[in-house]
Length: 219
Image (cartoon, rainbow, N blue to C red; front, side, top):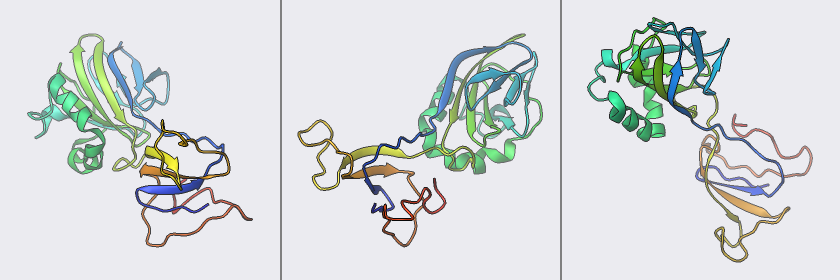
């Protein structure tokens, strides 16, 4: 297997599947008093979650931290539904800035939010979540979006962003004649986040000891 780093990877077509970690989101999620939400999975849990609604405030669990943007310099920029949507839309382009821009405002202190406040949470998995407080009462209703990428978060790997998979010789796009890739042939994968960039490109082979399972620290 010959593999190039950067925006493309050349691989031998095999049958091994791989999984990429995707963003997780929820709309109009109602949390009653004592409910804990795992923001990395979107599930309410009895243990191991990130954010607990006490009936009057949010408490973080474990090593998770959070902050209310309404009490920061970003409050005027990111508030309400439109501010939340802008934050989510900018998504991965902002994720590398979450740590430097929002990190100093995150703590384990309880937050008593108001409707339209936007919280930033760093989960126990090391990912960042934007939380919009839709309504507040004895229960709270929120929208949330957890960015699965690890850049800036240091948490769960985000996986590659694959933009194209083509035959290494013809480059024929999917949908055209002869675009299929047969087992044992070589294919070219275009995308980003497939490996760290390095100075030297190596030739990997299926000959013993075989194709490595990691590349420059990436699995």
